[in-house]
Image 1 (cartoon, one colour):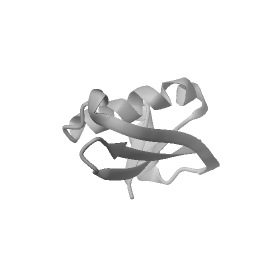
Image 2 (cartoon, helix red, strand yellow):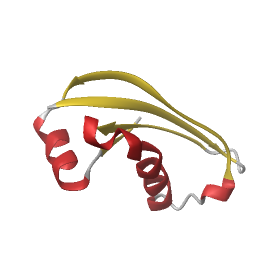
Image 3 (tube, helix red, strand yellow):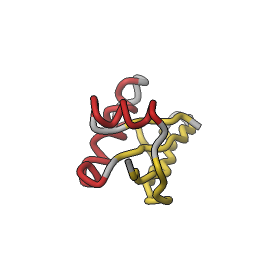
Length: 81
């Protein structure tokens, strides 16, 4: 499975910095922002507390079995950096 990696950086109003990758297949590229927001919400980060963020396409590569499983079951995979 070929996947696309989106490098994501978030700075909150309180000064917290969060860096993670959102990994998706071609079918879910349009959902990257939604997946990033869901991930932040799972960390207790509210969208209105974000001071600055960016989510940029980084590269494409072949997915390992764990990432393939996550994408098949959830539409995406997240790697916290």
